[in-house]
Amino acid sequence: MRIRSLGVIDDAVVELSPGFTAVTGETGAGKTMVVTSLGLLLGGRADPALVRIGAKAAVVEGRIALRPGSSATLRAEEAGAELDEGALLVSRTVSAEGRSRAFLGGRSVPVGVLSELADELVAVHGQTDQQGLLRPARQREALDRYAGDAVAGPLAKYAGAYRRLRAVAVELEELITRARERAQEADLLRFGLDEIAAVEPLPGEDAELAAEAERLGHAEALASAAAVAHAALAGNPEDPESVDATTLVAGAHRALDAVRSHDPALAALAERIGEVAILLGDVAGELAGYADDLDADPLRLAAVEERRAALTALTRKYGEDISAVLAWAQEGAARLTELDGDDDRIEQLTAERDGLRDELSVLAQELTDARTEAAARFAEAVTAELASLAMPHARVSFSVSQSEDPEGVAVGGRTVAYGPTGADEVELLLAPHPGAPPRPIAKGASGGELSRVMLAVEVVFAGTDPVPTYLFDEVDAGVGGKAAVEIGRRLAKLAKSAQVVVVTHLPQVAAFADRQLLVEKTNDGTVTRSGVTVLEGEDRVRELSRMLAGQEDSETARAHAEELLATARADG
Image (cartoon, rainbow, N blue to C red):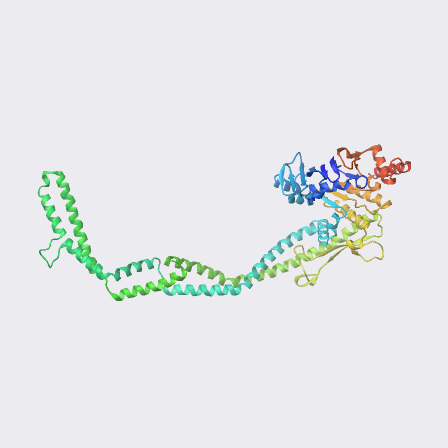
């Protein structure tokens, strides 16, 4: 990591060992800023108070090696990040005004993406961070992870059944609570469909009747006009002296026809006049037929108007014309079928709900059995680790219990509450000495004991599903002597399967590190690039001597420091 303008750190580079790295230095030298920097890279809260006074922004850049095909690698690629030879370049900037920006593999990303990666990459244990494992929900997750496939299999089935049950319950509740509304809607639909069925409208009937009503309403005027037109074309039989169009056109045709052979142009005109004569005869005949067929019956007009009124009553309620009314009837019939089928749907959903609850009961019992068995093994393993951490009489156990709930599922002959992860309430208990009752670790452990319990838990986890990196920020506070040596030894053991970074004041812990980093302030109170150094050989002995006795040149402290290093090397 490269850290710039963060707290007391002006500009420093921190290279962490693949194994166990111990970060040491005087109180207030800036060791915790290393932890803070890593927290920022992994989506931690951006606090503008962290920005060094006088600087515009604090910047942390890191290079994180990823396992090919890991979920962290896939998530980074989904975010558009590009890997650099299997490593991920991460950058986080926090301005003095509180603005924060994150970059992942050269791409700007939301800070939340870094937080998602954090769960896959680093387990942080600090004076406040370790409180996460004190929550029962986190303890249940820890136990499930330790149990492996014995819990993962039934839990996956349980989760699927639980999600389906929630969906069924929501739909069932909606159907039942809306029963009155649906009944009212069904009644309105039935009324409308019955009203339309009683009239039996035909497609386009309203337009046809409108035209007929218009014709019947003006029958007398139409008949008179047809008679006048017919007389003008074909003559009036009551007036032999009258001149009509047919007679006149016939005379014109005869006149031209007599001389047509002398001029082709005139012959063509004679042909056209002949066509006019034929057309006039056809129109005159149709006018005579129209007059004969015209229905001036007032009873028929009354019947048409009555039918139109019935159709208008439908279009006023159900559509702008009869076609729209018929479309409404078709849709209404389909909706009524759906509403009438709700009772069947309620019956089906009720049966499915009961079946799912029975399935959840079986799966919840499997989860309880698997967790109880894994809890015994986990507690035994953690207890054994505590014996190596100078807590030989401490006993760790898990409480796997359920709460009564009449609306719950049947587990172990009882009806208990259930949730998305089963019916179990899991809590880690500690009895620190013989005769002490097991109590939740948050209440039954002192600060030093709690630190050792957390370390023991992580050591046990490391053998099953190791997190790539573990970060411990002074979790050895309140511990000393033999217990401190054992903590160093267990951290070294954890580092065989994962990267371990520890900020510590204890030389007994630092001696077991594969690499020791010293954080030093300059005379002006800042940590510069040269202020974070890798200690080797004589320099490391001097730092351990200072940590032991506060005196780098004390012969006794030096001898003790060399002895600690020799012990650590022998264990390795």
